[in-house]
Length: 235
Length: 107
Image (tube, rainbow over all chains, first blue to last red; front, side, top):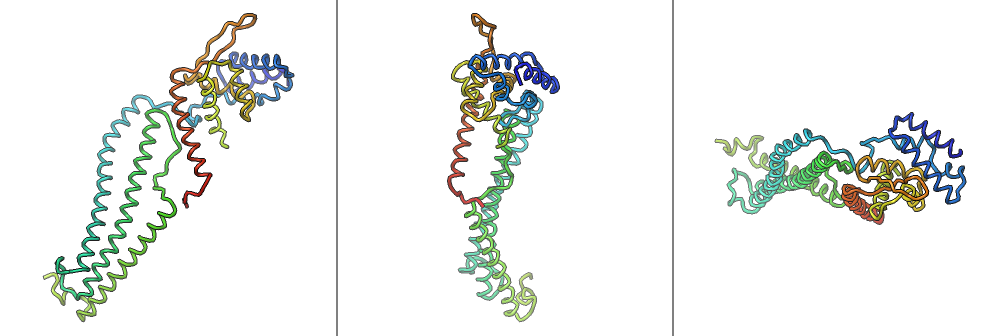
């Protein structure tokens, strides 16, 4: 293609894509040809080095959403709404974070209780049961506390991840700056994930084994299936 | 590589150039196509888009013995956006390099 052919094709393609200020664009490419010619390039080569007119024309179509770095920030009504949403969600967020402390306390409490019951029993008032059963109940509480502890960790990561994702969305609405979307599921490194999994599994097994063993033991010791009646627990 | 992503990076490069000094469109185009594997015509749509978003502005310079030619100049908004995007890009590249260099244990 020579210059006239190229510019003609470009003009046609720009019209087809309904681009504005076509003459301004054409003059820019015209100048490009002029300067390249003065640098010693032949017309055919200049046209060849430029992309096809159809492809160039499509690049002049302004699509606000296609830009990876920027997007037009939302209008003022949406921004006001987001601020109100912030206020409401902040209160909810406080509760979410508070529950991390709740679950953590539950795990700690179970650990303490389980240890006390298994160790001394006299310190912790327990219903009548053989000593071995008491120890097993304490151990099962320890197992349960392991599960709750792992759950607390996952929950804490989940809450922080949700906060991070919300913050990104919020920034995208307010400033128009967008980042790649964040998954709401927490991401854990392989080693930590495996370790947490094994802790959870062991805790679950300990809990089930101990509580079943305690139950069986108490049945045998009482000589009846409803040992809590035999030992007058609920009277 | 994703074309859309590349486009954003080209814009960053254009802003980097204009942040140094005002240029003719042709100079920006030559500079970029000399250093990167892109066609000569790609820069003009980028310049136009940057102008539409207010990051660069144009003015005509009277050259003796020729028609007035268009100069591109970066705006204040452009400088701000460029600084932020530059920081974001450098951090991103640092992270990617770290990931590519070794295994970070992710399953």
